Image 1 (cartoon, helix red, strand yellow):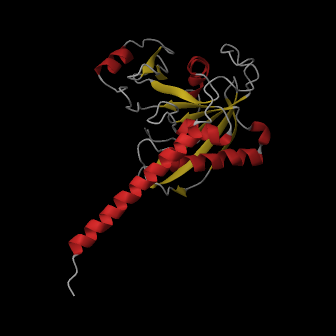
Image 2: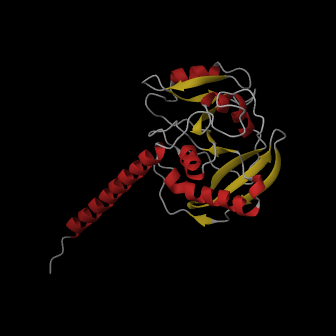
Image 3: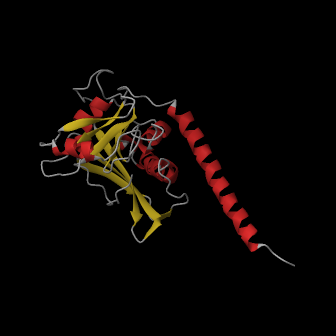
Length: 256
């Protein structure tokens, strides 16, 4: 019996493409549903008022959370959470997942579907082991609203855990006219002192984040965006600097 292997291969590849398209459509649907729950104003209980961007009274614990990939095999990783006493930034708690296998592939714009459950597991672990040390705000190694769907990893984690979050990325995600082009590089060159910044404005005039110089010596800024329950001004002016002081138990690779 004659078997048309070319046709079989073509049908298999078509099925894979369709599966990828259907998965992406489902992921976008989930992002759009969860996005309705984002709070972009200051609603954290440790702020004196919703409009108080100067006083962080009541803030006791700041978290840093991350998922680190094995360089030799990115299908394996380790999630980690570190909690620091504020403002001293003294490490008071940490946990990690151990070696885990990552089931989902990396797809730009959908990092949360690859990582968020492992990060939630770390948060659930501190809730069980040391509930008094649950972080009141978490700095997430990834983007918040600076994202294709305005719903990056930091937003996803914040909404699902009901904890205020801030997205802090080391690489710029190119979206809606925001790119690491000559104009962007010129703006970076104008950042002279620690804390200097400039807004990341998309082609519609919407400010999606801030580029901030982390230290006098740094040549690359960090990219800060709203995650959940924190205004951009509060995140940029007060809390993003703490990202540079966090010493997570595991080092990670740069990711977009």
